Length: 107
Length: 201
Image (tube, rainbow over all chains, first blue to last red):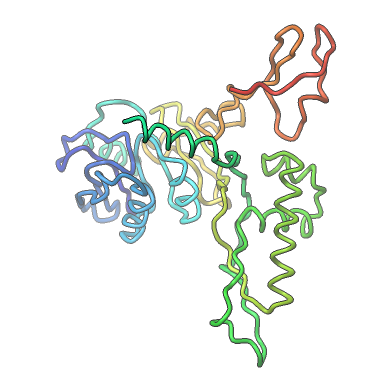
């Protein structure tokens, strides 16, 4: 199970980014091994198609779930057809570390 | 923005086609397309026919599930005449592919796929269920079992905002929410009994 979390910065203290396509970084957590990979989002400054390109990037990384604040209208059907679960977490100022803690507590 | 670009914008805005309502797709096709076979077929030479997802869905509902146009239009969240247009286009494309021996590809269209959405009452997150065969018991984020399935009414973030879409009475100003597939003129105002009209913004 690999879970992607959108982040505003490249550390675990960074805040969960409420946007999906235009977020600064993706934090990819592997739940089996506990490995954490942080990749910069190359499409954060893109004017259009940021969401769909980000979906392509994440699906190439074999992500099963994505946690973000909100998903766009083009992204939702795309993720649905790729069988990737969307989790919208709308509370402001949540650090990435806390989200990972919640996920670990889950298992 | 200078005056000439404003003029250009207005021209484009006025000549733009009417916006399409997103069509709801419950069963996307299980294959990417169809190929003809036979000795005289050189499929690379001929352009393939693009069948939109909405056209596939219309064809499936009418000729496979045997719904009538009205029932299918309600399921697809469009009006009945729109559905009939989509269905006619689907049949035209399929017959063209059959007669001319062309490939059919399923692609595109203004659609959204339908998966169930849930809300966790413990952490407040929203999530969907991409696997229809597996039912959701626990929140994927915090693991709490206090999850609740969204119904049509509680779903605030779907593509269409139904609160802005109203039927209005031209006589007394009575408004009610518009339902897709139900023409406003068939509904009567409860106070002055005159037919309702759609409210445009």
